[in-house]
Length: 154
Image (cartoon, rainbow, N blue to C red; front, side):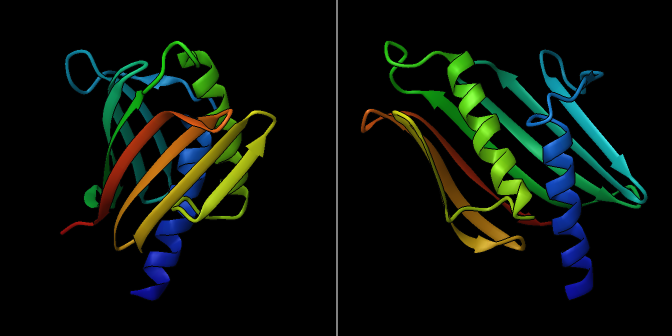
């Protein structure tokens, strides 16, 4: 099991880096109105399907040999649209997450300061079962947040 979860973690990091953070190309929509990002490698397949823009909700699923084995749900929103734009938020998220993925991980316990912006990610649990939150503070005020949870599925 440990070998599989190590492989799964490595795949999830590569998939996340290649899709949203890597500005990957959208695949065909799996549901009306969804934006879908897909990544495949060997027996693994990753699908991130989300709705919305500045305020958004989505789900990531990893399949192994065409069977769903891991998933994560998330909901994010801009709290102070007068202080930060969706484009600025996306830029900060991509910069922060790309640095986290370089450490070969995707779950919390991470902070990145860039000028007047600070990105935070914190969670409880591990790849097998977890809940967490990420947020951005600008000049000390929380302007964006995202709640996530997920884990292994059978």
